[in-house]
Image (cartoon, rainbow, N blue to C red; front, side, top):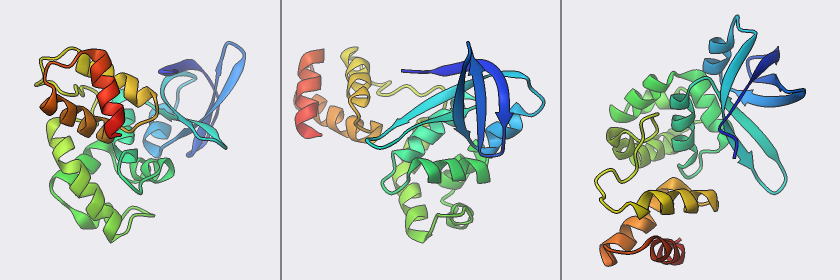
Amino acid sequence: MIDYIKGKIVERTPTDTVLECYGIGYKILISLQTYEALNGKDETKIYIHHYLREDEELYYGFATKDERELFRLLIGVSGVGAATARMMLSSLTTDEIRNAILSEDLNKIKSIKGIGTKSAQRLILELKDKVVKGEGSESTVLFSSSSNPAVEEATTALVMLGFTKPNVSKAISAVLKETPSASLEELIKLSLKKL
């Protein structure tokens, strides 16, 4: 898995950039926030979200880990795809998005192209508690109240298998309620049954 790419900026537009690293040019889709952060730079480090589907493979790039974590939180919401999340990050700053969710500012979220009333309500409903807990920010620590060290490893494993963090969180929480002392293997097996 690619965490970041560091290299020379070959091309830069408001929607994408080409970053050359050891002779390979990576086309990376970016938000306006990242575009502005790259202004005036010849070389940079871009944090990557690798988007892989049956028919396409894309790299979404972010100037900060914080922006990437919020992007990942946004695409975890039902009906919000990567393109919509990138549009949100181009229209508002990461702090503005978090504040709009926390204050339930429906109009601010609806002001983003492609977001209607139902989508805005769903975003607020699904993300408010997560934003309060600090998810979707660089310092995210899932299950910080849990004393079970297997939880973090199981979460990582299940996310790498392609499940979304919100679904993984629900499944692991349900398993821990039933079997609080589950080992890593048990946690993964039982969670898979619930996913």
